[in-house]
Length: 212
Image (cartoon, rainbow, N blue to C red; front, top):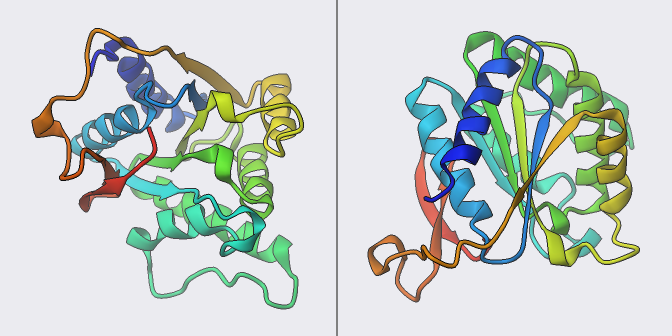
């Protein structure tokens, strides 16, 4: 994919996560820089190494979309029949703890990579839950969290900026910038009908995705 160094860093971070030494990884780049494709390549490699790959994608619905959607989507392949309740009564703390417990339990069985694409579209509920997870996974063996963010979307006042600033300050995340690769583009065989790039869906194959 032309991203050998970045891919090697993600693989190393997956190994480190099992030892409690890995920060989250934030992939930053412009549209077309290959963020989604790098996530897909890493997901395939991680699965080959025996990891459980959980993939969720934020959607451009603002706060009108289903709360916690990308993380709920990511956890579906690891369903045990006892899904964390989203707390209709407003008990967010209990729901957050249930999601954290699920991820930690999975990490006891095999390495876990939680991949969240298009984080710039995350609603408030997703941002809050992600911040909670990263604060409580720090320093403990557990999943590797990798997110992708479209850099040009982060205009002043963007609601994701405070979370990213806190992750930088606390060093709970490592920021991996991706520059455009103008000398290597996807070949026609790598695109789906209509020119859309595929995306990896947790152990299950590919589905259409407009994010890059």
